[in-house]
Amino acid sequence: KFGLEFGAEICRSLLDSGAPILHFYTLNLEKVVYGITDELGITSGLIEKSNESDAKDMVAVGSAWARAGDTVKSSAGQGVVKEIKSDGTAVVDIDGKVTELAKGSYEKVF
Image 1 (cartoon, rainbow, N blue to C red):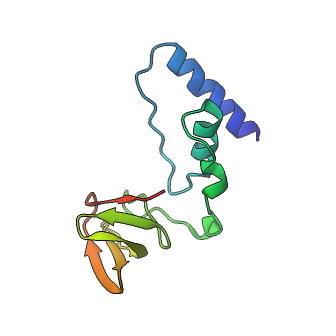
Image 2 (cartoon, one colour):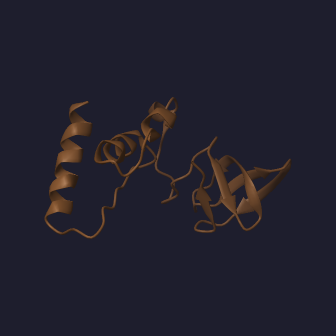
């Protein structure tokens, strides 16, 4: 709880001082950021939706921000990530068809 409150306090101070945006690096562990954005009133209830049961097994893979089990969307449709390759390519199951999506061509669905 301290991290969320402190993070929100710092972000509130930055915004009050004129910062036009906030940018967070989650390293695939977005729960704290969800808590901060909920605390700031930017979002509502995201922290309850986060699932970091695999946090102990997380490793940085390129700069991809999705992880196995996340729902993503792209021009090919919406599906569930099965794997993130070292170059950020996502292996995604879209309606039963496994598709590889290049890094930057998909976004996480909340």
